[in-house]
Every structure is written in structure tokens, then in C-alpha cells.
Image (tube, rainbow, N blue to C red; front, side, top):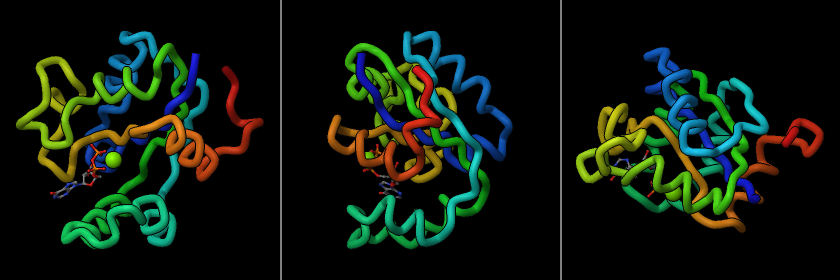
Amino acid sequence: MNRTFSIIKPDATKRNITGSINQLIEKNDLRIIAQKRIKMSIEQAQQFYSVHNDKPFFGDLVDYMTSEPVIVQVLSGEDAVKKYRKVMGATNPDNAEEGTIRKLFALNIQENSVHGSDSDENAKSEIQFFFNENEIVG
Ligand code: IDP
Ligand code: MG
């Protein structure tokens, strides 16, 4: 068992579909072992997405991520990072496989409903960015 970090993004909290997304997560044998609803600050969003700070979409991404509440989550499961990336689907919903969260729910390449870590190392640091270990109950 290992962990990954997930965010249910503003487009999804705004449309009140967090339960539908959690249902897909759980159906795919990932366990939600920590979860909280927060409003990200601009500073948090800039730091969280700092790897993209040279991209043309960075400013829009920060505005979007701070526009509405988000749900930050820790997921646990076998091969959790890889599994959740598969359950999420491709960044651009036009390219996402049938049945994935992004194919089912994403509005466009930016408002794509969920974030998931892309490596075990990033999962660890992203979890630490939002959670204390005593908030995670596996
Ligand atoms: P990922 O979320 O699938 O890992 P990344 O390339 O890490 O995708 O991009 C982070 C987030 O930035 C995406 O989920 C999406 O919200 C936004 N994003 C990525 N590429 C674009 C783009 O070309 N235009 C607008 N927003 C983008
Ligand atoms: Mg990414």
C-alpha cells in the first residue's frame, strides 16, 4: 500500500459533484484516508504549482485554483500514484479514456476537476504541504 495526493478542483466543488468523484475513487480501490475542504490562498496555489510558473497558463491556473473551495485528499492503495493517474485520465479531457474522472466530469484542459501526484516523491511533498501526519488515518 502507498499514498498519493489528490485535489478535487474548483470546477467540481462549484458544481456539487465531489461525491460522484469520491465514488469513482473508492470504486477503483483507492481509500480516502484524509480529506478536508479548504480555500487555497494565492500564495499556496503559486507554491503548489511552482513547477509550472514559467508556463503561459500559470496566472490563469492560480486564479482558477483560488476561485472556489477545493477538497484536498490523501488516497491509499496498491500502486496509488499510478492507479489514480489512470482513474483521473489525461490532462485534456478530449484525450481522456472513457470512464475516467476527467472524461466524465472535466470542462476543459484547465478546469479538469482533479489533481493527482505524478510520482511517489511528489506525493510525499504534496501531502506534507497540506496535511499533518496526525490528520491522516489509514
Ligand atoms: P496534470 O494535472 O494532468 O498533472 P499538468 O501538466 O501538471 O497536468 O498541469 C497542471 C494543471 O495545469 C492541469 O491539471 C490544468 O488544470 C492546468 N493546465 C495544464 N496545461 C494547461 C494548458 O495548456 N492550458 C490551461 N491549463 C493547463
Ligand atoms: Mg501535474
